[in-house]
Each structure stands twice: as C-alpha cells, then as structure tokens.
Image (cartoon, rainbow, N blue to C red):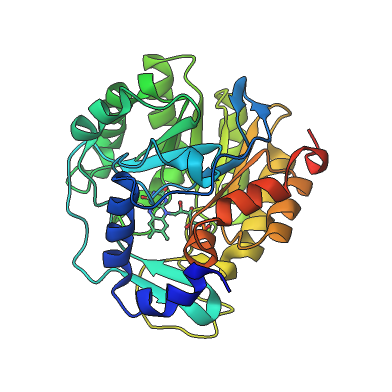
Length: 328
Ligand SMILES: Cc1cc2nc3c(=O)[nH]c(=O)nc-3n(C[C@H](O)[C@H](O)[C@H](O)COP(=O)(O)O)c2cc1C
C-alpha cells in the first residue's frame, strides 16, 4: 500500500474542497513534489507535448501550480476555468466524494480570481509543459452578452497559452450549457477567431449532449476551422451509482467513463481528419487510458482519477501509454 493510500482515509474525513485547497497550496510552495517528469513526446496540432497526459481544467483554476505539473508526470495542464470577472462561486460545501464509485460531485460554480488576476501568473510560465487556458462566462454576464465576456478573457490570457478552451459545458453556471447550441456557439467562436486567427481553439462539451447536438458541434468545428474538442465535462446524470448523496452538481470519475468513451467515438467519427480530440472523463487506471487512444483520442486529461489514485497517478498513466500503443 502506498503512503497516499495509507493516509487517504484521514484526508477523506475532511471536507473535499478544504483538502483540495491545502494540497494545492502545498504543491504551490513546493512542499509536495511529484515523482518526476515523464518523456513520451507527441506532436499534436503543431505543438510538441512532452507526453499526452494532461491535468484537466478545474484543478488549478488560478494557475498557482504551473511550475509543478510537469514533475507530477503531466505533459500539459489546462488551467481555469477563468472568467472575465472574479467570482466566489456557490455556497460551500460544494464538492463531495463518492468513494464507493471512485467519483466526485461538484457545484463549485467557476470560483476563480478572474482574468486580470490570472494573466500575470502566466507571464513566466514553464516551458517544459504545454499550457491550455480554459475560459468561461462570468455569472453576472447575461447569456446574450456571453461573446463579449469570453472575448475579454481570451484577449487577456491567450498570448501565454498554447491553446484556449471555450468552456460551454459546466452544469454549475445557470444557462451556460445552452451556449453549446449552434447559434450562440458560432457567435462566440467567430468573435474569438476574428481577434486571433491562429491561436489553437477547443470547445469543451458536456457528456449529456444528444447525438444531434454532438453532430452540430462537430459540424461547427469542421466549418469554422476550430482546432478540436475537449470531451467531456462532468455529467448531470446519476446512472450507475452505488451511492448517491443526493447532491446537485456535476458528476466526475469512474461512472462517467462509459459515456465519455461513447462521446469520444461519436465526435471522432464526425470530425474531419486533422482535428484534435482531447478525451477526459473517468480515466481511473492505465487500461482505461490506453483504451481512449485506441478509440481515437489524441490527448487525454485526468482529474478525479488522480484524487483516488494518489500523487504518482499521472506519471503511471503517462508511462503506460508511452509511444508504441499510440496510433499516431
Ligand atoms: C472539483 C472539480 C472542478 C472542476 N472544475 C472545472 C472547471 O472549472 N472547468 C472545466 O472545464 N471543467 C471542470 N471540471 C471538469 C473536469 O475538467 C473534467 O472534465 C471532469 O471532471 C471529467 O474528468 P474526470 O472524470 O477525470 O474527473 C471540474 C471537475 C471537478 C471534479
């Protein structure tokens, strides 16, 4: 049993978000260190990745641990979600563990320090890590003005980023997921493309979209020459749970794996060759990670699997999927 697994019951007795904050603070200060970088280089959309395993958005919302992520074995990290305005998010408690399911439910609601506060932290970003910046809509901004809100954060953060993800799929900002519809989504994407025609752009989608909605997103990505899709965010579904704490919010972790794979297959089928799929959702062991590449993922990200798997989880995953099994 690893040291982490010995201590885990103790950690799991404390509020999940409090533990998260303390661990992030310890990583930021260098008190907790990873096992060391993993080299399994791949090139995707013209960017060289040290390895294809990334830290999913939401873990480092304010870009506090940038210097540390490579040492945990990550080839890239997606910081955020960052919004135009700083915001506190929903009332606590708002993050819950489901240990029997190796899952989490969260309704954080984009708590973050805002684009102006995060931008300076990206200036001295480490070069041994590919950096994605995930942007979302501020809660105070009406849905009709969403494009302006995204445009502000994009302008502020894009230059330091290797790619930018437009998050329209969090279940915890009222109405946000309606921005996945063709009309509003194309408005946002046009706007960002006008501002910068070359910055790699991704759309992060919900696993709860139906087939027709997935087809719409894929068509838009093809038509507007968007770099790719991050699939998927958390789900509002509660199927296949051994324990359901009856909490509102987005479910992540092992129960999401099946749907995340389905969405990966659907989106891969419908995207033109050359578009990039970053697959995320329920990757909780090496086998699951490998399967995603076989099914057409170009890159993967993890969050909940790390919480349950311990500090060396990303490095283990990255080593397991090293070069020979990658289809391209
Ligand atoms: C506590 C928590 C906070 C999250 N915050 C964000 C966020 O701010 N932006 C975002 O795009 N996704 C966010 N996510 C979703 C993850 O990036 C990921 O898409 C999802 O958790 C599925 O992956 P997993 O099963 O490996 O956790 C969050 C997930 C968790 C568990």
